[in-house]
Length: 204
Image (cartoon, rainbow, N blue to C red):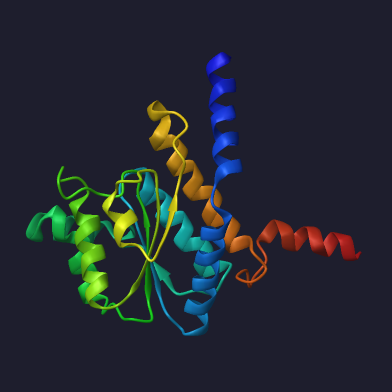
């Protein structure tokens, strides 16, 4: 029970100290992205890739933003990994997708990548390619020294309150933040089914 209570308390500390100014900046950029008919690419690995897939659904269905995640296509992902290498898989996918200046990439990552330690090089190469196209780069990460922190136009850094729980805290906050965004009146375009049903009941 003590561990469960402390885990919740850690989340409370993170939520109360999260940088709302940076979230608001990301919100404004996404509103501008939709206005300019830009596409949003969400990229992550591991648990962050699962979050990316869920977030793609929400941005498309609720916000009418054209949105994709390369990890949703397992056949292409594994073929590119086999033929071109794991380090190049996202960069090469973005090349075929004809990444443009009006598009944006949102990275979900715990560590944010490290060139020196050779960690998440696939994310780094994707970000570097995006820079050559002058594409906006956004990220939600849990490591202040991560490569994505340095290269992002807007980075939401998740505060570290317990070094043993950086991964679950960061991945949880990814979920919280993107739900804040897709639920915001400036970005949300369509009602979710349960809210729609509730509104109909209230009108009767």
